[in-house]
Length: 260
Image 1: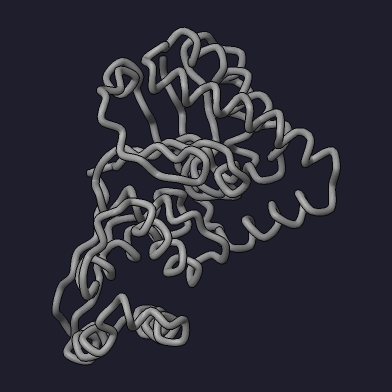
Image 2: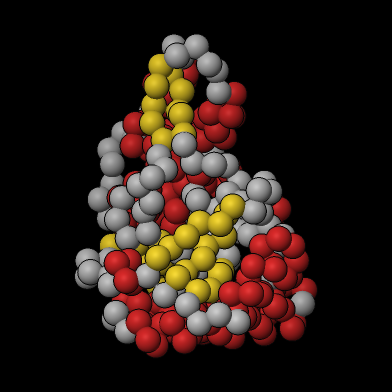
């Protein structure tokens, strides 16, 4: 929900499970070549010590497939859900420490879009709100009042995007553009303050910060935002009761509108 991109450079992040979308294993006649590719990557990456990849290969040959209702390339964590589902079914011994889970998930999700924090699979696997701080995920145990007091609306841009390309572009911009890096550092500070306020249920503080965050995100990631979404985003900045932000990598897929 917060922390897109910024989590890759030590920013905080917060992620909330969205039960309306899910994925599940089902036996049928449809072959999923991408699962075969994923399995091959896991073997090459030395994941056989953690995962029973022989069983996975046999299951795939027997017609087992992973069916998902999560739109791909949408910012809703489709790759994280696949990672969590594969780990849940094939892990030799499921690890309990969150930092160990996160490390495994980061290695696995690298197949989908390059550098990964392991954050999205962690949220899918545990099915609980997760806070990422100092690159470490923890389950949020306190009640989050914004979940009941604010309305989260998914806005579909109608455009697919490839997260790996956008993440690569973000990392390259950090490495080559001083102004981009400076603005990301400022955005990270605002982002971290928002998350602290949300965790403490200081919604008035969080609301003011989110408006500033949205304005800065629009300026920094302007060409990551499709024109139709950009127009809505600009209109929302002039309203008192709603705001828009990136959801996932941007570039297409879904965006998040928060109604206060």
